[in-house]
Image 1 (cartoon, rainbow, N blue to C red):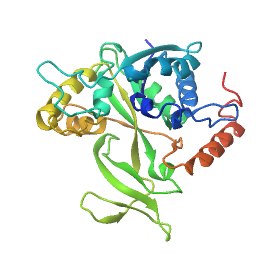
Image 2: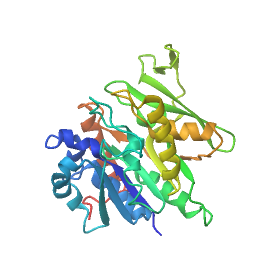
Image 3: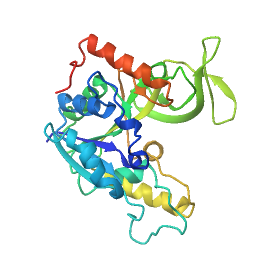
Image 4: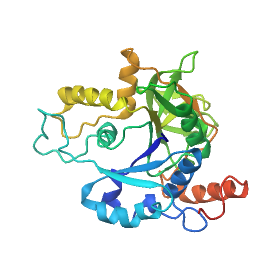
Length: 302
C-alpha cells in the first residue's frame, strides 16, 4: 500500500483570506503546498490527508483541497480541542490547541498505512519526499512501529532576515537520532559564524552542517498507539495548563530515551524554504525559479 502524506493545516484557518500558506510562490500562482503535494505524488505517495479545524472546513476544501482532487486521493480530519482520551476533559478557559502530537492523533482512525507528517506552509524539496518514500519501501514486512526523521543541514534552513529556532539533532554512529536540543535565536552573525541561544541561556557557536528537524517525519501506523499513550502522560503532567502543548519531537525523544524506539535520520540534500518573515518571500520565489530553471520542476505544475 502506498504511504499517505499527513499535512498539519489546522493553524491555517485563523488567517484564512490573508493566508501565507496560499500565497503564490511559483510562476503560475503555485503555492508551497502545491509543490509539496506534487513532490509527494512523484515520490510514490497515494493519498493526502489534511488535518484542519472544522470551523473552516468548507472554505479549506473549496480553496485548498479542491486544487488536488484530480491528482491524488484527498481526505480530511478535524483537530478538535475536546478530542481527548476517555476520562480527560478540557480545562475551563482553555482555547489553545494541544500541539502537533494532538493534531496527528486526529488522524488515528483515518490512516492505517505508513504515513509522513509535514507542515502545510513549509517547502521541503523533492529529495526529502524521496528519502521518506524509500524508507517506507525498505521496511521489512510486518513492521508497523517504524519511524524516521528527515534531517536538514542547519545552513539550508537559515533566514537572511532574522533569527530562527531549530531543533539541533545529535546522531549516533549508526545514524540514529539520539537527542534533539532546541536552540533559539539562531542566525549568522557579522563574523560569519552561526550562533544561537542554548537551553543554558548562553549563546553558542553552532556547526552550520549540524542536522536539524523541520517537522518532516515518517511513521508506521503503530505510532498512533505510542502517541496516544504519550499524550495521556502529557495530560497527566500538563493538561490543566491553559497553554501547554505536546509536540511530536518531544514524544519521539521520550520514546528513544525510554528504549521504545529507534529513529534513523534521513539526511536530505534539499533546501528548506519557509516564509518566517515577510522579507523571506522574494527569496522563496527566487529559489523556486532556480529549481525550475535547473529542471527539478516543470514551469507549470500539472
